[in-house]
Length: 315
Image (cartoon, rainbow, N blue to C red; front, top):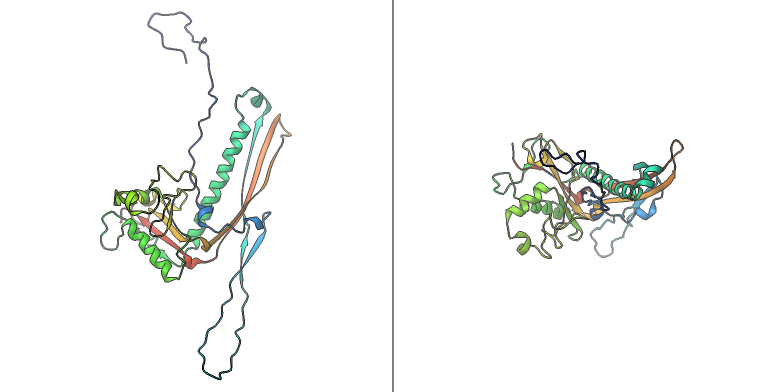
């Protein structure tokens, strides 16, 4: 674009003398945080190598306890061996190419930039898939329904809850199922965390343990809201949680979001980058880069999960 000229000034009128300079820095796109690795058991990732692999997870056997009196003959309990299978039946891939002419004339390494973006997109797709899967299988403890989402409000009326009230209800359901109080997690969307921070302006600095932060200041990489716990939950922010319509900012049964909570052992995940390769494009003068990520997920303990179907505006 030519630099502006005064009226009647016709020297070098086309502006071709103006140089075009490209910055050495790249404006990267904003990236969503991923929380699946923080809220699931990833101990089995090293046991898979390809699509279709199956990891069999053995369950602890149950033992019967019976009353006893002196001289009573005891009958041994038969131990029943059971397991659950996690199948690596999910996959995502990427592919792109960089032309030789573009590579030679560019001042940037497009292959490196694109590969970095592809790695993020694979992780983001994995995160979204796992969160949706957890919600689908969190059927034991559910607060609200799709027909009547529970309302989370700063001024709750009958049948409504404050943000901390919802966390309390999640904790109650987990306690009733004897879920251990360590490794608990809670993940919600920005709408919920806005309400949480509005509920008490001193909530983060005073009432929480650990370093006080906010979703804007922290959680860039793993979505964690605060270093300490909230109601004994490690708390995360996610934009990959399922939603319907306009999400929790809407009203009625056509608009709601999902909050998930649970114990880290409730769900197992295993993921593996099976292949990343570069080769010459047979149809042009270009390098082709492609990669494949495979993964599996399995809800092992549905009783250790809670799903909240909610919105902010009721009906």
